[in-house]
Amino acid sequence: MFVRPDLFEQAPPALVDTAPTPGSNAPRIELTGPVSYSTAVERAAPSVANIYTAKVVREQRDPFFDSPLLKRFFGKNPFGVPRQRLDTSLGSGVIASAQGYVLTNNHVIDGADKIQVALRDGRSFQATVVGSDPETDIAVLHIEAEDLPGITFGHSNDLRVGDVVLAIGNPFGVGQTVTLGIVSATGRNQLGINTYENFIQTDAAINPGNSGGALINAYGEMIGINTAIFSKSGGSQGIGFAIPVNLAKTVMQHIIKHGRVIRGWLGIEAQDLTPKLLEQTGLKNIEGILITGVLRNGPAHKAGIQPGDIVTHINDQAMTNAKQGMNMIAGVMPDTELKIVLMRKDKKIETTLKVMERPQQITN
Image (tube, rainbow, N blue to C red):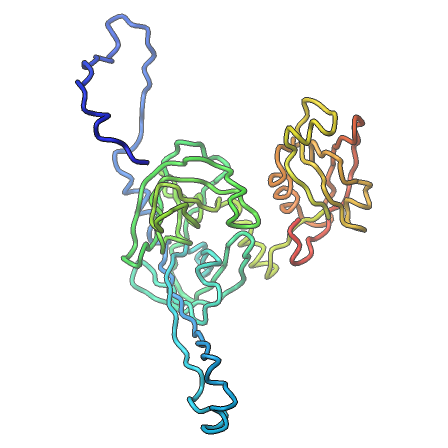
């Protein structure tokens, strides 16, 4: 936003004493907190690693060199094999356990031929990929090492807007860096970053290279994995996003145990129930998600759910938007029974259905 300087070329306002007058009943807010967050940083920083990746890229040869005329005079391969180059990139990761598991973002290591994990204490290790989940942008690596300082996990469900947080990572490859901010918002979704989104938003500076690093609270506990920023310049503009640690930990446990993430699935497509759609249904004062599609022979189809139904509750939890409902279903293990409450026109229907494992490449 541009501000005209002449807007400030006026007489300054008189100073006003805002201190409460003697005898005033104005409430006083007692503020408490540490003067320094060095203790929290010292607790968490040894667990945050730098990740360096490399991959061999085969350069495309100009189609001109495949001309039949050139091949006639110079042979089938007149200019040798196509050239190759080595692409390198950097990011961050978090030592999740003393057993050598490292959490990072999938986009940090995606397609890499070689992954190096450099610890704060100067040690460096070749890493192997245990598994990854592009739909939450989480990857799990493993390194063979001893005396690893595993991070202490916090609880992202307890976060409140205004809580102090610190981001630790390796921005621009300058080395481990700590930035300070607050929780700006929780539950951010519909950003188009991942399939499953439930981001913590923060104004702690996050820059390229921070991806995969830790977002910690004032006690040095990890509460998120730094993942993305909203920026028009490519640098931090005070709008960063982190994957909540509760989600990251669940994905990691699935990958370690099963080699993949197991998600629940009902075979439905849904969208938010907007005021205009609600008006078309003839219903009033109702919240829920609108079923727009039902896959034949899926759990929802077998339970009698139809397009046009409005799901108001799943397992007694009120549904407010489609993302919330899809994320909740995905988090349920297969063969679990779900209680669904829905409205069909003006009729309330309750049904129970058994969740299936979500097939690959299906988003609901």
